[in-house]
Length: 317
Image (cartoon, rainbow, N blue to C red; front, side, top):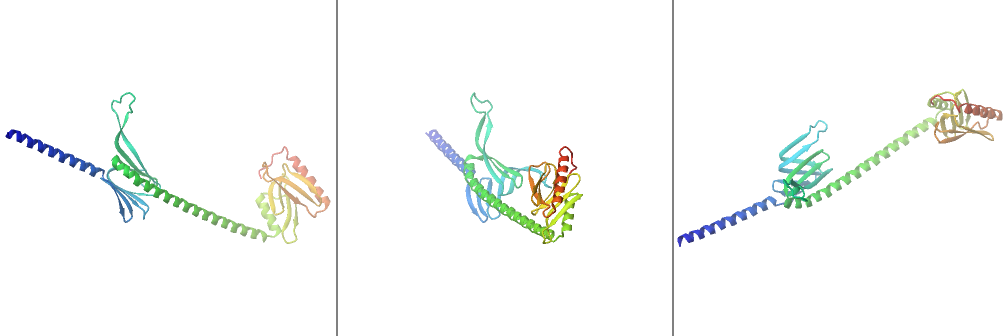
């Protein structure tokens, strides 16, 4: 009888120990997979067993603290490359941060026919990739029950990051637009300044500037003034076929190759290529007010020189 009672008590004791062990195991499992999202003075924190992620809205940073993690950073500037594992505390700039979670797998030793050689382990690897720091931090063996709620928190981080990136892009575009406007305004001021200087030039000074720009001084030239101290038209012809023409507030330094010379009553119209070899042409009216015999002499001179250029090679303008 006593032996029977002892066996019963031992059985009950073993059952009690087993129940306590199962309870403690369940509590330990719950402890390992327990997560929480907490409000902090700087933003919000995702808290898990052994690691945490802080979304610091006030500073635009994301901080990752972990007892076991791997961190790598590319070399840039005077900063050498880094590669370390263990307890880490890393802060990333939110701009450019990307968070990725991927299932961890193991390779089956002897997969059956048709069976995938990679078998899910039930755990995840979570990577934080910071483009600003050119660095990455990775947490391995994260239980699915932890990775899944973190994925929701990570989406909140990514939405916030995308908003910051949009704000930065808008700011950069506004700064670029302001810079373009400033450069255009400066260019207009400079153009007006140059125009004012040109307007203040005497005809002789203007002709000297054109000849300096063209790189030659013609052996034959004529000039017509507008009666206000300015130049209405100008032609400067070099014996090699290079020519400077001005009328209607336009000026060209080119050659007579392919030019068309036309008599228009009291003036000549000379149509030339803006740049030799280009398809763009410009027309200039010159010799207005000059005697007919002068216009005829110029027309003949221009046409003879033009025709001589059809097979000749001109020096560079």
